[in-house]
Image (tube, rainbow, N blue to C red; front, top):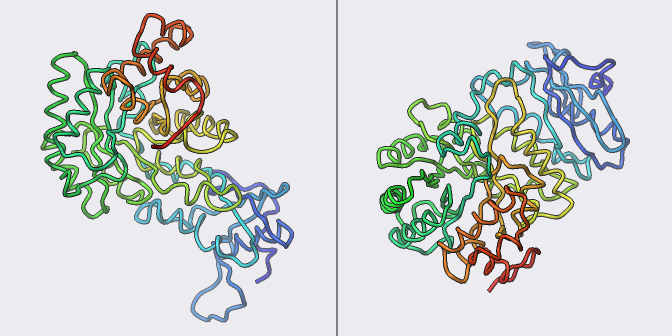
Length: 421
């Protein structure tokens, strides 16, 4: 079978094909290298095969339909995908499968996917989405960014110590407190003891402030156990659940999102993503993982910061586009609330909000708990920075009447200067 089978003579029907876009580095012409991807991931193989029991269905061949510079687009017939049972794993096995090991490619990066409506229809997406989460927190009118925090130090605290940090952050004004991605059920901080202590502390904080505060309990585990763990968490008072979606797998998240008994928002952490996304020449762009997370049902998803300790400055435009995609219409799926996390402190609030939008969660860990006056003052300083930006005031002017913000700016300034003790 010649490679010409894998080249489209006309633009493919987007309702009958899943369109994948790759950036390719090869010693061969990009068009030929792309056709080898199309062959490997559909009906082709490295040599002619002899068979008397089946016939080759050439209509199932993936086809290269556009090549521009190092970019190549491939159309995969939707009949190739088993989305009803195979789901997201089936999609990834084809568009991001063996191709990364092909000898003909020196490097290849999956940049984007375009899903036909028939594929999207098999997924329910987020259960709450942006507006659902805002409605629960009562922030639908002012449309301010949500403030989140990660309990620090990230591991080592007991359940009671964790709850004390959560209580202080809640009184300071955070909307959400989350576990770190490395904490699940370690001996020093057992899951169920931690949940009980934190929710008791947040119930007390709600009684004092009148505000609802989410606690994203990290229940990362395999798809075979995750709904059982989630149901037990809900029975014990959990009001938000968190999953490390790359390490646990998208089916773990989807199992929660599509279970009608799991009636709390799902916070998706992207731990390990950079193994696939950081190399700009090889791997998978975060845009692809974000789309898959939306299909699977994430209500919130970490996507990166405009100013912080993670990533590079030239990624800001890409992160902004990912956030816009998560909030844009997608065949009836609810929009996702992006989360910016990693090195954020009060001095970086304006830059992040201006670049990434107001429909976002600003997660500050050290930027809250490292405040000279402690966690409560650190949370207040972050809220003051958000309030100042919403009012159109400069942080320096607002800080003249708000001591917590003033001390935060004195400590961290407004530049990205990170020093690890």
